[in-house]
Length: 628
Image (tube, rainbow, N blue to C red; front, top):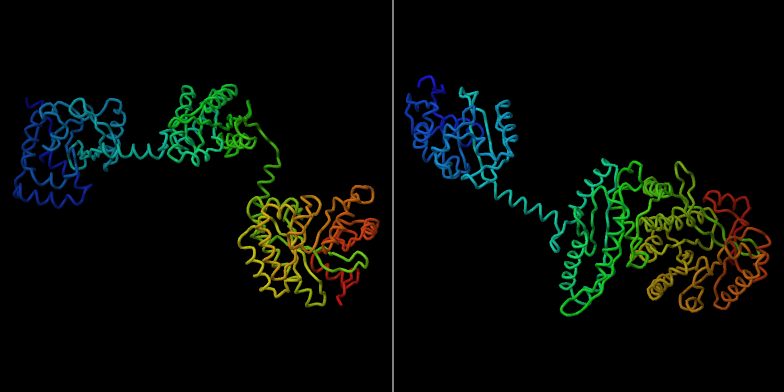
């Protein structure tokens, strides 16, 4: 019998467990010391326990331990001391109640018997870490409670070998409710509350996985995006509750249409997605898109009323080029490509399917690079103003100049305005640049005045975005106040399309600015509406004949007739007329014969920096118009 004994430390298992755990929870140490003083007078030690006497020893230890350790470690659901083979040497009474096994039965088990079999490797790894590190190690595992009831617990294990006793102190916490709460939160994060479908967050993760699998298997993954056409009319006509119900019905139809293994998600308000896994084909993806269009086209019924909807569908495959490596980054993202196809379907009028096609146009990459360069140009001050003279057609005397913005790119040199102005408008920089041009042009006029070059006016182009900006009037007044220029010397060049976008609003703004002295010229006249009605309606001062009419003026009878009509129109309305793009003396002479007042173009001068223009006046290659 003696040969079967396992030699252990003279200290009781409950003491070993508490000592080990006290190192982890320092707040427990003081209570443990108080317990020792109360339960074990100096010189008295609890008896050692052999393997056959584990239950007896644990019971005695639990009796001594009653009150103190349970109060100190009340948050611990399961407290035990294990030997090196993970057999239970001590289990507290509260732990027996928690785990649901009889103490005698538990004495025949090891920790491996309590942990779910599929997590045996994780338990083994936890024990190995605790044995090697000598520090507290933890893992979240499933423990089988009362034979059949699995619960999720956090096991914390620390080796007691360093204290002379081979084995481990074990503390476990029931985290079932935490895990349920975590699962609920994860479900909320990854699912749409209205339809129960995956949301965009979940879809993006699934798309990344599908793309990776497609690359690995050298096949295609697919994405079908569906957007209900003009869905807001449902909300307006039937109310938001009805709109929500129809969205739920749409989700059910899409789920019914999608095949096995195809993942359905709600991306945004009335936009849905179906992700096709790796191994799909263009034919399968397009077929699904067609079936979705048919499903949405079936009548909806809400409170006895039939409602008909249509949808736009965009389809994309990844990789987008068969037999080639996928392009990296967002450029080749399934979501991005399908979204582009969807946008094209909506632009075509809706109720359509568009398949994404590869566009390797290098202009896209160049435009993206130019956008970045444009932001840098604003920060680095790479813009300057050039000025092109406007002269009286009979005398050649300069009456004013048009301020033209130039971008001196550090690599490409001067970038044409036709390239960067539309770009600045598309990325929202045109207001900043336009306000800068306005102030710089006004300041330049004042600087020329100071050296004896007094021009009647400076013309500044105003973009539609800048004109419609609510802060535009304030920006104009600020520029006038900053520079001290007379408002009568400032002319804004605007287009016909700008005026006709919102005639009422345009009239109010023009009248407000005209009241402080600003004058307006219609730029590129003849290329837009060219309506006599709007010319009479708006407070205008000048018309500028577009260069396209001047270019073929000599050879085209139609162009001569148009210019002659414009001249007569301007004279009848009391408007000054400026012909743009005049390059030859023949053009100038014919325009003079037709009755044009002023000209602008290379015949007189190219657009010049301010200092070069000043030198041209000093050298008398350009002559100032003398006002009486």
